[in-house]
Length: 83
Image (tube, rainbow, N blue to C red):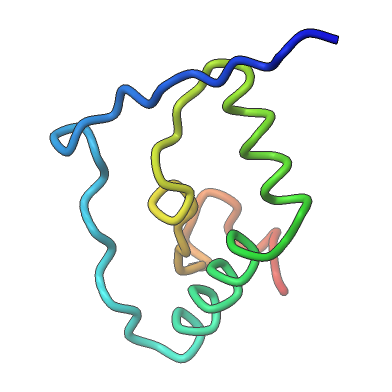
């Protein structure tokens, strides 16, 4: 079986996403905590990023790629998405 070739990242510091702001609410802190745990320990999430890289896509740092966003009822889904 052939050896897998990994592509080298072409992202520079100029292309990198700006550092996210510190979470303000308890919900944002919880989201960031869950995101960080998933990105560092969840095998399925790591597999997903590995497969994306094999396709030749460079997402940079997964911690900068996956962001927590607040949910507002005035958003694109309106009242359709209630949790």
